[in-house]
Length: 571
Image 1 (tube, rainbow, N blue to C red):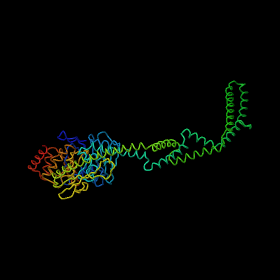
Image 2: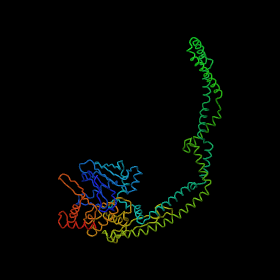
Image 3: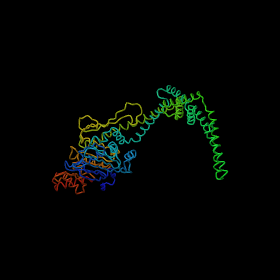
């Protein structure tokens, strides 16, 4: 793995995106890029493929893939990104929940095949595009592309506003009070039986009465089932026991008792001739005793078998009712006794719910009052912050070449009176990119370049207070130049002092501000074209800036100008 690029500023945060590897992707045969902290700029001639890095990150963030992304003649394209999660607790928590965690690092990998199919992995384990997208929103934010920009989400806009205002503690209090209010409501509904308390009490009383009459503890249920089985087969048991007695000790000469008596007599004669047969004779004597006991016991059993049809009908009715209750309550017969205990508790709570309901209602009213107070404070804080942030971003939009443009942060009150975990309003960022145009929702701004610069202005104004680790700006310098381009570069560099920033640019004023510089170039051998990505050293940066300033021919004057730009950017 290449060593990460080093930022000249020791205070710049460590990089989040540490490396990107692409193979057989579009016109890139193979490239491995190490990213460092701060601002990394990417430049290159028109058509060289500067935005391929952004495209690769978008695919690793779950964007739809197609076969056209595979290099001609190859069977598949491979993309891999490595992230350092040391300072990204939300991403670490997401990976832990999904059981995809791997300490403080994360690898996203995607393979796109020439026939159009693709597969993805997170930390070496298979993942789907949805999972890639969820995780990527916590790792990288790509500005200038509608489908991969967290700022287009109204929920994220509110989070950003609250972070800008320092509302974290107040937001947490509002959320907690709303949660407690909802939980008390659930307890009240359960305790009161909802809107049909009396009907519920009546139903519970009826069901409990049936269960208390028929349901049995496990031991008694086992005994009932055994009795039912015995009573149902009483006739067969009596007849069978009598038959066995006849076989053992009947009048027939083939009865076992008679045969055994003859065997004993013969064995006693043999034992008189040989003492070694005495133990065997003793066994026959014992067998005779046990056979006699068995015959007597079976005889008594046959006489005592209960042939009571009324008792059988009673037991059968009990079991029939138990099975009916089992079907009604959708429970095994053995669990009906426990069900009765549960219904008994619920009925007791409902019948004696008056005092408890009054107490819970009083608590809920106090929570509502506390929520209203905290939500009002939050609304006031949000309104003040919205005005300040809107003003700051509007100024920055002017500095970034959008003269007359402005940002309006609209806070729309919700119509619900019940406590809401998000507070009493919803946030929408409205933007007017040009003088005289009415503000429109940021998510509906059509121009990629304008959207990227608005996003940059918001990021600079909020000082990177969102939790995204890496920000990527594409098309941020579209349609600008001169002094405005230099301001854009300065803002990006300032942002790079707080976050890792990757910017694709065609302007030397922006490129000069980078802490590191990557150049994308095309090479052709007449048969195929390849894209090459390289990290530039000091001389390489000077020459690249000179090319960007003067075109194909690099002169001493353009080199001198490029050197001045680099020196001025370091101040």
